[in-house]
Length: 325
Image (cartoon, rainbow, N blue to C red; front, side, top):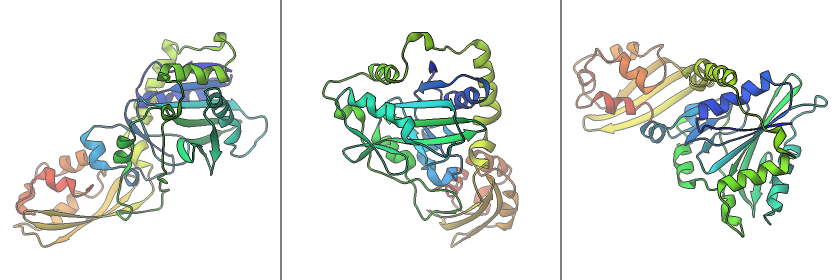
């Protein structure tokens, strides 16, 4: 088994690296990486239903869709991600226990009694510190999981916070759990770098297995980032169909937003409320059909119109927030 530690905190690159390894390496790989603050959503999720859009957009937090199913997770530099990419002996189904056992064993070495619980979690004293997911491709399995070492739990909560009734979606909703950091349970403090070594030594027997990405590897991974992982279509367009109903109160009155979205594109939108305007809002509704459901696309589509002609006493910035509030 080869061993790779990422040299970057770029979430697009690190998630794309998983797919690159899966398709381009015959040997098994154990891969460790950390991401700068970012949200990683499951393959089958409605991205916008999982994130606090205003919080994420204001802070420019990257949102990346991964290959595997499961729920949305918040990453930061206090979170270590581990990934096994291996050949399957047979065509077994989903098996989380065998891949998480080395993690549990590593923690036992520092007197932390972690347990595998529920469907895909690792816990300490009943609190979750690791969620796991898998993706199967032909004869190979990609298993990855989070290890919350010293993550900012407040940021985690804020970035994923969303009104449960805001979206009526066919996607999978994330399950919010009580969480904890591994560092809080250590008898002797460790840096996250020391923790990485602890995990690596449990899985890898010697340094000869260490692999460094070549320039060719990096170039091909960056192509995958550009063409897939850092695109609107992959992150939002793969979401299932959903409807949005938001209400915005502003100085000129109240606007209700009803939006039908399919594959990340607005198919229809209707506005209701007690607002005033001098022009017919049907013009706005028709202008917004068949554009991406993003703040940038909405602003661009309406750039030639004076929004206050349709909704008195509101700016384009305020109006756009109503789609995601």
